[in-house]
Image 1 (tube, rainbow over the protein chains, first blue to last red):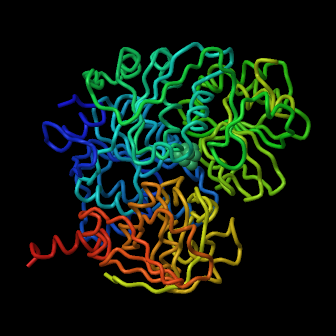
Image 2: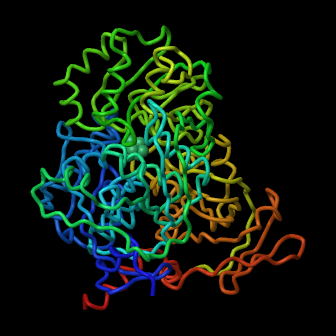
Image 3: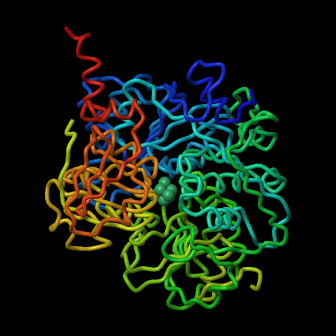
Length: 418
Length: 168
Ligand code: SF4
């Protein structure tokens, strides 16, 4: 009998089994359920089910992130409904507007996610949180209602696909470039239904902010979850919570369904071209493409480290004439930190726009959407037609380095050359 | 659960995302009619007007990839789409559709054999698709637990039915 992968260990524990194997259907006990405005959609089936109380208010976290602050009266009302529900249900960890953040970032930075946990989020990029060594999967509204009512969810135990990354990247090249390369190789359904576990020296050397980027975009591989073993880096990141730390890793003899090996020694920046995250080109091949908009935001790449990169490049520079460069931090905590470090002043001096934290532009919702003839370079994770506004808009996905260098030059730019 | 469908086909290609099905700008409501009215607008602005109750969708690989927005299958179900057949489905879209009682059937290779406007028949009990030229394709059987949800008419109906006896 082979050993277990991280994913299998977590699902075994969550279903009170010794061992689980890929393909098996389990009934999992959820350690944490988190939601954003999807809660409003989930309330319809929740009420239909006929329950009145959530299974455990202490295992639920809610924030508002997609439309913050609300751009229409209808959305303001939606927020009210959510606020009232959380209050009535006794959900203490409701992070209202003012204390908000893009939910995945909020869960990570507040230390709500721990290694070994079964975490369910009402959003497809819940995968990001798996970087702490948790099984973190996204679901839709009806499943969310079922978990709210029962604290349980059926899951098919996924095969684990290993992505092994080794080598030292070129300068100004990041985890974002690595994951774009991986998706460009596997395709946007290359890991459909699978758990993706990242291993290798490059991954081990990444700090948590970079590990989150890897796991975040396993969603763009079609994966159910993204995972990285919980090690000293993870422990350090969670130290502020004061909770006991239990490392988790796959067994030596665990069975992986497949291994993709990437040798990234000297690899430079990568760009996903319109209109699929797997439409990969090295930055050299798209250099010189004129842009109208640059966006640094989203759960993928708008952490303080990303903002520091942007500020470093922008200091003493100007955003190109005719280009709008919008920077939207992933949470209020990051906003405050950027303020403290003087980054916001650098952004404003350079002619960039700095906004409150929201998903807004990432999904074409509000606060910076694209017109039909606009070309955008973005630090987000998806560029399907219409994702960021008009279906005709062209979106290139890249790292914070490449996004900022391009904003300065008004065209897609290799950040190593500035 | 309806086990037999006969309907007109709408075809789509590979990697049709939830952004194609319903754009983010329409999500600021919980009204299913809004999602329905704008379904597939990014691909074909007349689609939502042209589709009729009982129509079927046949698509390529990875249908429904992208976000967790259940508004995507809600839009299609509200318009009366009776089933979706694709080479493969993205996982959250698959779950969401089943939870709504909308059959999503993996039928690899079917996309190449049908054209938009064809009328095909789907036999859920036998797992068969009958093509206009008389040919028959088979779709992959749904796992028993998934079939149970579909047979109950969706996840909410299933949970309600399970709870009902205890409420005497
Ligand atoms: S930032 Fe974008 S990808 Fe991330 S949760 Fe928000 S809408 Fe989704």
